[in-house]
Length: 476
Image (cartoon, rainbow, N blue to C red; front, side):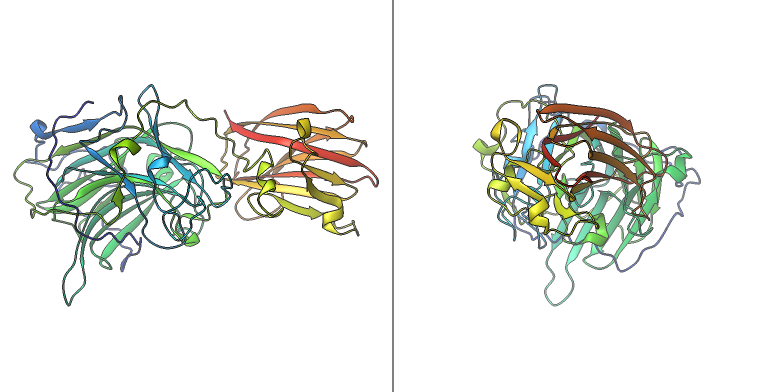
């Protein structure tokens, strides 16, 4: 493991409270250096240098180092399953994988430790065993690319004050952003810093407006996110890919902290959206912390955590294969053996012209899928659909599925939608013919102004029956 320093014998005694709120929403961009402005190339403040002798760098080549990192096993907030060690993996090429299971997760292979116990809305987090102070913090990562899961990189120290508000010294980078715009997307990133549990400033940054190039952070590329934490003068400089995204000179922490990274599920749709997906991953290439010199003073502290630590035997011991991420939730329909028809990603319905009950025209069958597995039967005017969020212009996908039909008017339609209308801005239709199972596949590219995909399966012809199974939508 590549690690330049380790600080051991730390105590874990304080409490964690990670509600992402702020008493102010200020765009503070003043600084003592005219070059440190949002949209400019990242630079250091004059007369400040790095202390290279204390560099920490981890590229996860050999997995998660027990001497450096705590794997979190606990929860904060409500309405989620917490962060659990079962969601931490690494690949043989040194990519840390932090899994997030959304509200459509139905496999039950992992259990939650928060208010949700069935594995839904469970994430993963690493917390440094060493403490940190002013300096440059960076992470090269791909955020989990769906709404409802908060991909975060932050420092944290919460100290109880009797008779007054807790000190809550915290600096956050969180994705997706957009809550101030009213449209949550991966075009935005949230930059927030606290000194108590309410005194905070949060800047919701549209990155594309800074670089004058349309950029979505779930584009499948690694991006380097970070912040420079100064205390003399007091300033936080947030940055991405070498560009300053925001500058804050209010509510600047001065307590030593721990470094956190991970994906978790806030119970607040207005923050990062709803977690309407099954499973996806945050991917981390490396993490770096480079302290500043002695000009940047701080208050020594022993910050603790409220979540438990995974046991040493719960750390991943061998690399995992890189996962294939199906953007369609429960596309094999096997969840139906333990759950109701509606929910978990699929909507069973009927066309407006159909008068029969929904359960007569669109319903699951235990042996109606491919090779007698679970599948869905759609007859007469039945209508089955599902939605996939965070789809943007230029993204390429392959849709595949198994299907057969006794008629000539069975259809599958892939619709691209924008964020403000339910009508398709562009669509592709596949006709299903033949009463033998066949694999259908198309490749599509999201058009301008795309925001999501709606997949529809339906019949128009009376007495026609279509069967569907193994639906996959894979991002190229």
